[in-house]
Image 1 (spheres, one colour):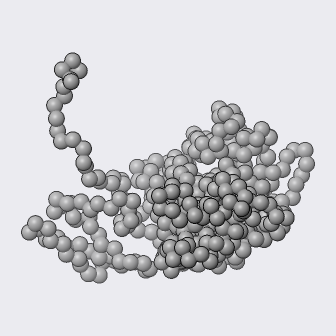
Image 2 (spheres, one colour):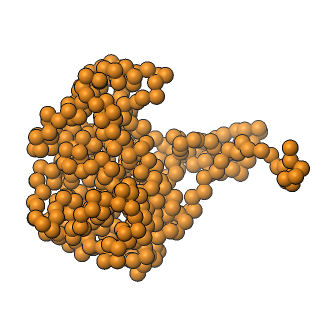
Image 3 (cartoon, rainbow, N blue to C red):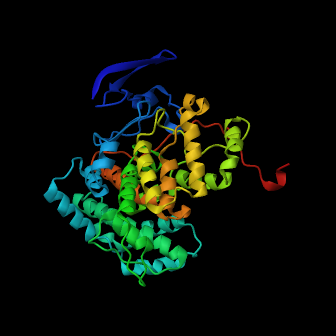
Length: 428
């Protein structure tokens, strides 16, 4: 709420602006009245602009803090589980045992997809990137579940949220199976969320497989660590699309498309591709030298973070998990993992990286971990989208549940001034 005012004077015009104070973080100046003075703010990349009010997630990048509804990310990742975190993000509080059990059952009722969606996959090439398939399939869900698309109806929003949480693992696994030419595996509701996903990914009708518990726990932590991250590019895209009144499936599809970029959700895939480019431990010094050269376009991916100017709090959790997975699958002697560990050591000890706070981030460790689990590189961003769906739908629901306005960013126009049309034969 506004507690005091800020004053701005430009060309003999003075305006007052409310200063809003949240529960955590810097105070915010409400600059909406500025347009009445004939001015707009200019903030490329929205580095200093709060586009919305939210109660879901808080980040302090300087201190390396990430809170879901007030709970530190490391406590949730180590002591909770992804489904419980889904309930927390969606509803604001942790569930008791009875409510948690009901929530799990509600999700299980929606894990299958409409049978006709299976045939929808046939329209894609087998070698299509799984993210391309996921964007299309998730966007098409509104054509199959149009019975609950009244966004003003809280019950419809709740059912849509459950459907998205429940069906994303099924769709993600189907994207993988279609890509490699194997039959789709139906969900198993007696399994946990992460266990069920691994089963749908790697089991076949020929033989029943029970996922390794170490890998199940690791994947559950990865889901939790990626569940939400405040107003990032994809979440902002979901809110932007949602402000038009679009249905939740279309909004989530828009978020998936935004997540696909290598500067956002594709960073863990890019980090592993970088390890393959380095090729051997003997080449590390050469690539470190290139990374330090400001005139060389090569950059180490998976180090440093746009938000965190300290150690990424998620990296602390996933680092330990990464080592557990490498031990469980016997991959510590893999040449690419040796490259990764050597890079990690340099980043934590070299003054160049320490002074610039280029610490290994969550993308660095999650890429290594997912690869050790057996998930192919082109599925990394799909896993990210699966996990981030709960954050997207929580933000969408928060926005739709409150008074909101159609998002309409302004611009600084630098194009031609008004000019007359010249017929083609008269042009020089």
